[in-house]
Amino acid sequence: MTIETLKDQWGDYAKDIRLNIGTVLSTDGAPDLTATQIFGIALASAYATRSAPVIEAIQTEAGDVLPEAERIAAKAAATIMAMNNVYYRFAHLVSDKEYANLPAKLRMNVIGSPGIAKVDFELYSLAVSAINGCGMCMDAHVHEVTKAGVTKIGVQSAIRIASVINAAAQAEAIKAL
Image 1 (cartoon, rainbow, N blue to C red):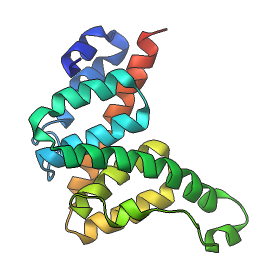
Image 2 (cartoon, helix red, strand yellow):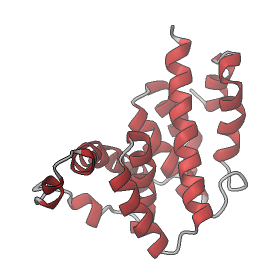
Image 3 (cartoon, helix red, strand yellow):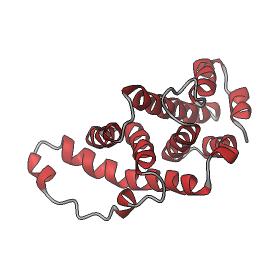
Image 4 (tube, rainbow, N blue to C red):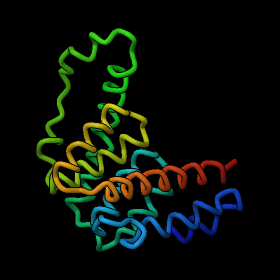
């Protein structure tokens, strides 16, 4: 399955997403990110949506651009953020702020040793955290990527990719109705 195949199956309800997905998955459409970062962010975002057709299309589109280590890291980012985003969103949103001061006591070793460039893993984690809606995690990942030299435009590009991939998964779900 390719992105073109997906786009051809979406109705007029997804016209903007059809246009945007082609744009954000290019270095022109995602300024200040490399092709590897773009497809790593897209793949981690696809995993976060849990949409099998979107995951398959992004995997196909990534082709030779995304080495195996990056593919594994995208899976790891989506998986670890599935845990962290729930935990830290709770700690951030619950009225009793004492919870935020308690140690998480959750293993998160992959964040410290992701098997790829740390900044790239942080970008993948940022995108997944945006999809999952964890403000505390988004702040932490923005801090790390900007400290590593990613520009505000690069951060915005990562979030634009995540938002379009999330919308693609929504278009896929609606298509089935």
